[in-house]
Length: 367
Ligand SMILES: *Cc1c(COP(=O)(O)O)cnc(C)c1O
Image (cartoon, rainbow, N blue to C red; front, side):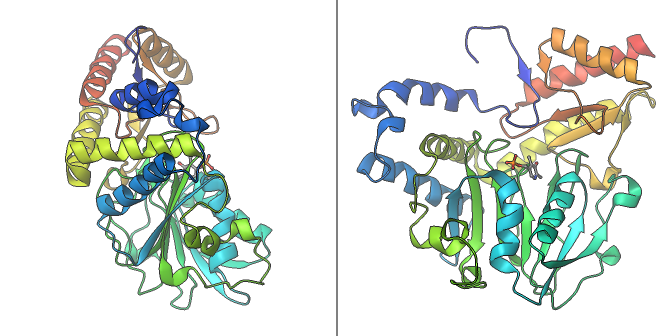
């Protein structure tokens, strides 16, 4: 957006935000709807901000089709803080939780359980397959007594995604949805808690969205060593106004959710995301092996597409030439290499078509 060159932003996060949202936020930044001050200058306990806050929460519940049995918490600290808050609040002394290990972020979540001196089991892993796939239901070894089953719905770095959630046998699922929030409808039947930072699919950095089934709010009760600000109950009780919330990120989050509603909701967004990813997977599959997708086809992500070229030099040239053509943010994660295109909700089909065309052209010249 803006007056600069046309750029298609494939950054993994922070990432592209709908241009219409940025424009509206820019217009309101200095003077919020004729109030004579910016939304970032107002009290978080005054009317105009409270309306913004409640609107974001309501839209979040509405989009996911959730009723009052769930609470939406607007927190800070990123998904990384949730790696700790989840076991602090949901994993009781002497009990154990199950974790499915599908990549870097799952492993970070598991590490945090150990930091807290708590117990968890790896109930399934694709580490032996270089995180190129999602374990099937049959490959899972679930503990029916587990406090919860933690999984990463979309693996941002490896480019894999749960196509549907596993059946957990009534054990609450805890889902790190950082990189596929609001990208498709979600079946909530077994989900006890879902979380994610807003900076990938739902706005800007600084806001972490937590959706929690209310019956889980009191699992680890007060007086059991969880600091006040780290307790889900604290934030549920105060409607996420226990302390100063990240007001601007929440304002933007609400605008993004409204934008999604205008697109037709999550069903419409999901089919748009299918189309977008389809264009690029077709470019990979049609390249005669020039591009090698990392993810196994049955585990492919619609959000982050990862692929390798014949060698590192070709990958470097690919990213440099792409950037020249206005296609930015395509370098793979530092420890993994290769190319990664992140196609979050705000990336439009036109951007995907331009990238697919560039890929075909580059392969023709490079092959
Ligand atoms: C980006 C990401 C994280 C880390 O999020 P922060 O907000 O930086 O803490 C965790 N999990 C997944 C799946 C991610 O994509």
